[in-house]
Length: 158
Image (tube, rainbow, N blue to C red; front, side, top):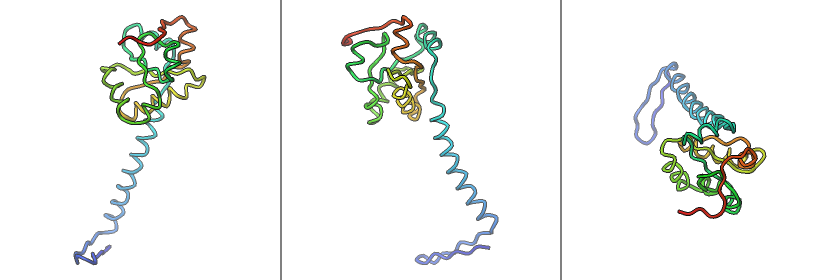
């Protein structure tokens, strides 16, 4: 038996060794479950192959999010894509809330021009951790444009 007396209030807690070990095990398991959940969320951020994106895009089942800078966005973007720079997504909840509202239940597909999809993967991770289903487009804008995908240029009219 473990016996603990509170110095200030004078109450005594008596606990069997098995109960103490069980309580410690529960606390450790809860902590590990939270960590595994965070790792799983990051691992679950996936790249979306171009052909799968094209199929979803043609059906209107995705919201394309360009996470590049404004100049790149205006030079050329996937038709209908919204512009939410990576810095805006990482800075706080406003960018994420805008994306979630505009997605209306569709899969969010982030894209950039990086050969490794680094920016779009980071953006997708921010969205997934915030509860928004998201994937990063493999090949990004350069592969989309090279494949003859619909593009827009200039400042979007709102």
